[in-house]
Image 1 (tube, rainbow, N blue to C red):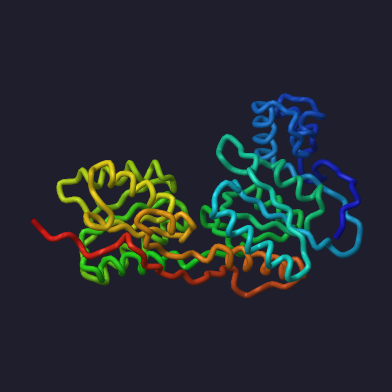
Image 2 (cartoon, rainbow, N blue to C red):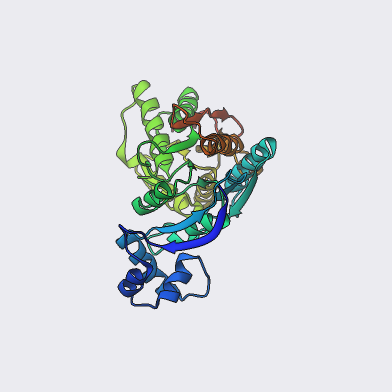
Length: 351
């Protein structure tokens, strides 16, 4: 359906834009600028209006003309500065080209003080007339899920940060199996003192990878050691700090499964700082198989995540939803693959 350009604020059962403006202590034109994603609003003012929109449950109504939805979808990402996002975008664009659709990429989502996409970011979808949205690594609020539902805008989430509400369509990798394979590889080399550095405790993919690590240890009859579980917030600096703590233990690990390639590079830095070597003194396994994994010295053993395939699968699923299909399975999980390179070896001899 193609938008006619007519916009009305609120509804008979919801607050008007004037009510939102009064709640945020701003003028109606200023509130309207925030709703429409305008940039000429002070950050503190934007925050107050956004909080009022969410608090009051404001829903902007856009009148649509009858007719077919345009073959246009939005791909919303946090940043295009990473090869992770670039690989997902490549897959989505290739799949869109195959089916004759266009993709609008919104990089650098406007974030609220809580770190979540602001309402104005979503409102621009309606203004643009997009038929659906592909979210990459998103963490939406309940009101934002409600906004999409009330507008009838189909959407798919690629690797959502947290567990989404029931019925939300998602695409991801077999993270738990990937964690099993990573730690299983280290066990097969003879390691028993194996640590894990996760991303975030609550992040869906990170917790699944750590769970796979624990499952591999349990299957091998090796007790879990709480001191061997650390978190690096998916940053090289965080993983470096976590690895230094592991190396300071009375009985340090001989191997570590790191839940992203970016963090694995931080582990490399920590090992080098202590005058140790990979893999002679400690083996390292990453997760993702980004180009950086091949460029690292030594080349990183890692779990390949099918990022381009995830982008393509998400795009195809979104097109099906836009065209009125309702797939039975809301969750698509694509297989991972262990890629063995030079960062793993048997544990060093004791003594």
